[in-house]
Image 1 (cartoon, helix red, strand yellow):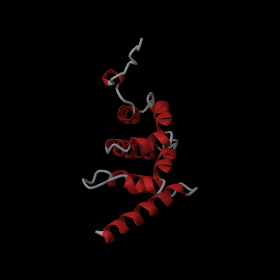
Image 2: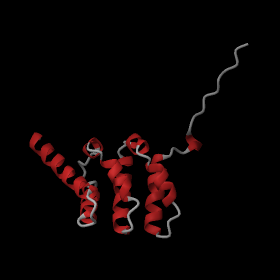
Image 3: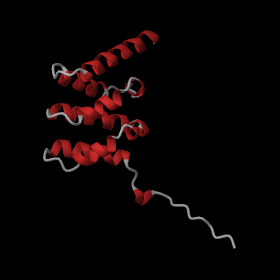
Length: 135
């Protein structure tokens, strides 16, 4: 188990390093590998969060390559689906998604809206508490 965890840490570190490099070489493959890894039943976002990956993935939302953007959105949806919304909110992901909610690419637009739905609570279901008058 510990060896498996070390391998996972090394892989995520390597992929995040490739995404952080200035050049574009390997970024598409690295982000797609991260996105595919989220489809594994045992995937959890803790290591990605611990290594600062949310900020790196958020930055990939600004890429010109739509494959990179879509893969980044898939990762954000996967993280939000696990309940780790706070990490996404703290890194300013909602503002980026808001800007993408009307993207001309329908796949990007749909995935951005899916992510927003997971990150923004439906106020129709929110319970509001009202202070009681004490006279």
